[in-house]
Image (cartoon, rainbow, N blue to C red; front, side, top):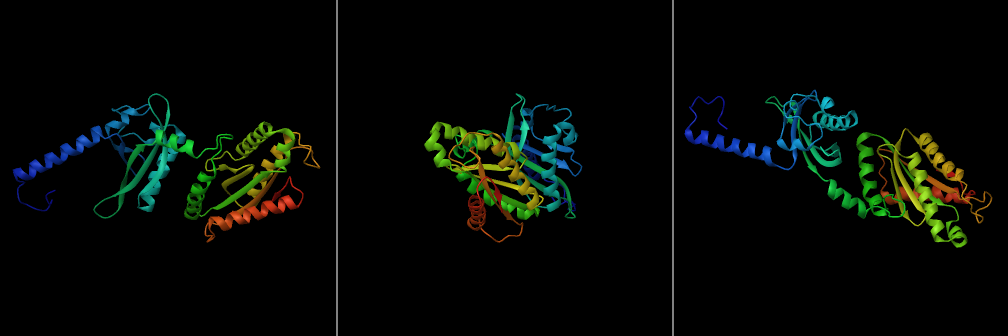
Length: 308
């Protein structure tokens, strides 16, 4: 690109180079199978490539120049704009998964990198987003990390997400809770009622977890046998204990007969909690051990209870 302060006339060779660069850029924007766009600091789209035609509600005549909240449903616009704002405020690339609807009304997941654009004075004046559709790849991955019986994620995924959530908690200065739960005297239940009935109990536990922990960011796992784990953020120990108590009470309220589980005679859960401060230096194994010890205290104290 010629220096703007250079008074020399632009040569034919330089003009040819500029035209060739422009052709390459236009070809990229017209044919790249990814979403490429820019927004100003008010959330107005200032550029979007042709691939946006795949999105529900896209109108080439009005898309550029419209605000993100006028183009997408509110919950989708919120996630898109939140990531743009983070990139602008933190002045660094942000990598997140985002969801948008295609013209066929199917919800697709995109892996997006958003990064700030700087003016000559070094100030952020806009953000750029490059998004790749990972819906099929994500579905295949989900199959590999999902427990077939309960539909919850498995231990492999628990190990992956634990580290990710701990980093997120550190970045966002929030407290994370690890909850461990298992079915009281589950071996005896299987011995008495049979494994098919035991499978129904495990599905019921998964339903109780989902009924309570269904906020964005709440994660539930079956980590083996009748052992379950949950990761979630809360305002503090009191809220986490209250959520755990809802899970315990929800399972007890089902009153599934279990004659080998006195004194209730029904299927019950014991739960243990560990709390992870945003600045905690403990690793996964140490935090898991804390929750496991809390679960052991619940068992030792009579089962069908929550301990910390």
